[in-house]
Length: 379
Ligand SMILES: [Zn+2]
Image (cartoon, rainbow, N blue to C red; front, side, top):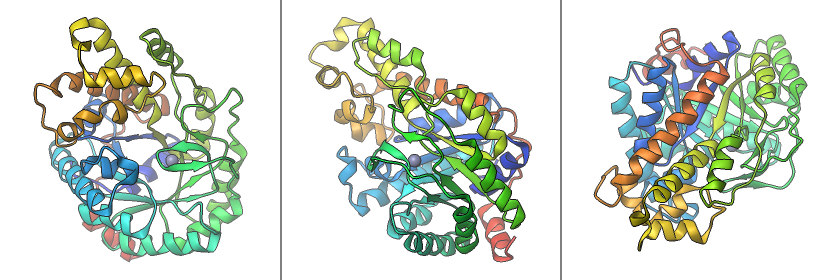
């Protein structure tokens, strides 16, 4: 199956009232696990990397302070890896940049071979957000690459994205944004929140999704809506982590609310936190099952120092190089199964919950070259 842009996958999802999970990765073995999980349930796959994730993939354990050069190395590493796997896969595969912050970083991902990018100008004044997104669309569409924009501000923390308060997306402005930028999809703010702590009273504003889609139909705009900050934070995993010595808390978005907004027009749902939680539980479980593993062990020491930490990149920092280079020596080998099992558990569950299972053979297979021609004709 070829490697495809995001556009045909989201068009299919929007037309059929389903959504696809988009799963964040920070190392090659996770991308492989995502493809394998989707092959099992015969579903199209979206693999995504956030901008700090590119720096991590470039070998920098201090990924929030990565250089453009490290991001370039990381982008090339993951794009080459995913494209090779996609050629052999039996399902369509998309590789997407999550939260690109500048034209330069988005360009790095496109030049490395990503088939889709997000440019997040939501913290900029509106006109600057439009100008930045339009500039990215002009560059990306010539190469057949899809573009996701963002409008409105989500509260919460996600890697280097932090906002204290949210401001909901205005459906009229969303239509204006699609028209003026030509972007393929738009992340909207409608009550979700980045991170694991969403509080007890998550209330998704379904009417924002409905009104935005209605306005888009009126204006004959063919675009998709995206939900960020919508991790489920499975409570059984939180409980298990804490039973294994962790100190994690938090609540996610109730599945019942996602099930209402998906048929209303949400076609892509980002999932990152849940994968981090599942991996953390698996790694803790491995250490608790064998006392000898804990003796003089750097990773275990880091886990004990910060029992509330569930971003595996922190406690696996001593092994960053092996993990991102997909080189599994005697030190890194034992983490492979806990990591890939955690990815598969979440990907399979979420893809089924969002309705994406079984569509692999129905998503139109479009190459980047064909997509560039289609964009050129304004279709
Ligand atoms: Zn996000």
